[in-house]
Length: 259
Image (cartoon, rainbow, N blue to C red):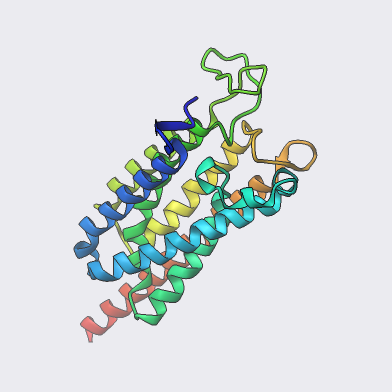
């Protein structure tokens, strides 16, 4: 593992923070590049991205600290050392989405157009950021005897590299959504698809996780399982609602043309 990417005198560049910055930069860069296709102003993309990311980091850190308070109770000031790792993705994602929705409504931006623009970028940014988790040694997996098991410092047995599983699966989601973008049938399809695919990925990956997670019931399911399932189900419902709305609008338009 390599928690510290570069160390020159008093300056230290942490792998966790660096890979999150790279992931965020790539996500925003891609969104800016494709914004015209969705009729979205690039300045709006930048503003929404900045505030969503900033508050998303706050939400992710707070959720992680709350669910792992025993880790921070002996030294509360360590809460602010975010560059060392420790973020709840769903906590950050939830607050980031809430922030984006507020700004979208305030600026009267087409919400599902922006959602479809953001969906592949979210998968790409998340995939790159998880490499930082691997470098920091957080969010590691359960013990395994598989040949690709990784031994992290302080753990006396190989574990699943769940961070890299996350990277690989979200790069796959990014590829699927990027292809889907050229075959989109209705507004919101990509965003709903992202919720479904990302929820399913996290639900499956949660079975292999051990670090930064806790069991909820039956000794097999965690809070991550519960939230991931809710995200996937929300995506399924949203997909069905938006698809039906698009069909209804198409039928109404066809009826008007025939009059």
